[in-house]
Length: 286
Image (cartoon, rainbow, N blue to C red):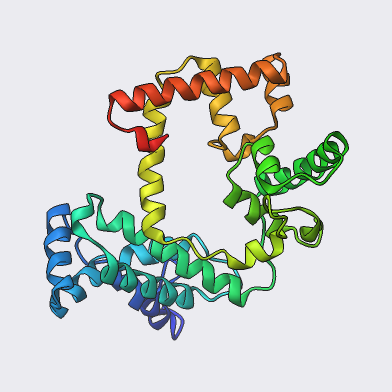
């Protein structure tokens, strides 16, 4: 049976929905950790051949990450191109003596450049479910605290009650600036608006993202030393489980404890973690 004209050509140009020239990029053999370190050192010294090999050996990582962002407003080939830019930035900045794998470091740069391209080129940005949940809790909490305090709560006060960092809190407000009055919430003792604070926020360096990931893994090991109840309280109050961030009263309702008792358990658990970390020379992790 004669094949349709053009079918072979189509197959040669596309494999599994990916253009063949991109598929070929994924065929370069992976590097060992020792090869990564050696090539990185040479690349930092200006060795273009080493730099090129690092890029080529990690293009499959770019393609695989780009696949996760398909069906967005940006063409797949453009996603790969943006990811390649992030990969090249990683090659230029990677320090092989920091202790982590190049592929781990590069992943953050690749994701950042792809995400930035999507944000710029797409009008619609989907917010994660846990961010929407936090917004609802913020609206409820802000109303309650305003009534209790007789004034608008500060960013630190709201972030603490939500169990999240101030940086994450600022991102939450930025995401919903049409729903929350940024000018009415004071960022600190001086009463500066959160709108100005948000504008001053800079993009997080992917290297910090790698270090945060490693800190999280170490923190998980420390949490294993706590009782189940202490661990549960700490995880929710510190925002370690994004989908389950809760207020003091929410934690209390779940564990059938008063807000004050939850606070006591939290303080006790943090002290215990500090002591364990001190013994392990990991105090900076807490």
